Length: 403
Image (cartoon, rainbow, N blue to C red; front, side, top):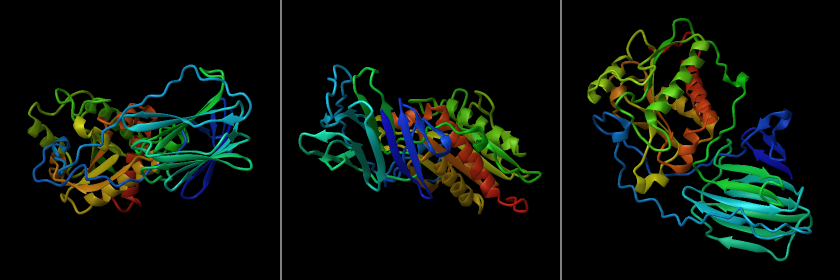
């Protein structure tokens, strides 16, 4: 299969040529996953509350139960070989949190995939339909699809139930050549607003601008010890520590001094309230700022409504909101995750800090797709680099260390 795709971003168009399942960007940059991100307005996942000890205690405001999903898995077996150039409708699989379309195609079909504001356009070169095809209300993620004959082949138009963003998240594309479980080439398109960018970063992308002399901060991996935090696709205390250690190493390589609230599976006190207070109180002079890392979760009845990144601040310091905004912007730029926003919340670790402080929620362990993001090392590296860049950008020029 030969797969040529245009991926639109804010400043440029990426081109991808896929043969035998390999993805290539301009300048021979290897792609494992291509896509754009998604923008969607959801009800608030959290509200500011008085004296909240832990972000997992924030209560949802009359959140309706997530819409039911009628799971319809597709079969990968006994697919007849396509003889000639006539194709049929895509096979559709509906799963909890995402929808999968599989286009079965003759060998070496040329394709062009273009993201649009509310879906995708697929140009299939050199094939034809017996007659035009369409379907409405396919799933929670896919509003409709249609396929029409053109002078050069077939055009498939897919309308998603959410807007498409332009920073490499929100869907996955995979080209599978003939000979692997099928006599045909296949184009697999998975759609969900929860998909994030899991493309591995190049080593040269991980470097930061040097920090000003004397810069130091507190980095808090949420939970630990007998407090696991949220449990789902990942265990919160394990993932927060993994990410925080990545952030620490990035910052130290750029000359920053990083003081960790924990570096292994431990807590500061067996009493939850005391533990959180002690963590927050580490955020005082001579520290310049404080960042706490957490993983989000919703109860099972609402799990499909919770995905993406969320960043919190509190009015403990006049610069806390600016720090939260900087962290949120850089994490979104690197991951293409769904943006849940920057919110004010009276969280224990934030209100007990004296320096600019922010708490980041890096994904939902309760969501089937976002949980897979959290299990992916490339995604966690992107989160870590986003946090590190957000800190560095907040610092600004050397003479502007936050007080």
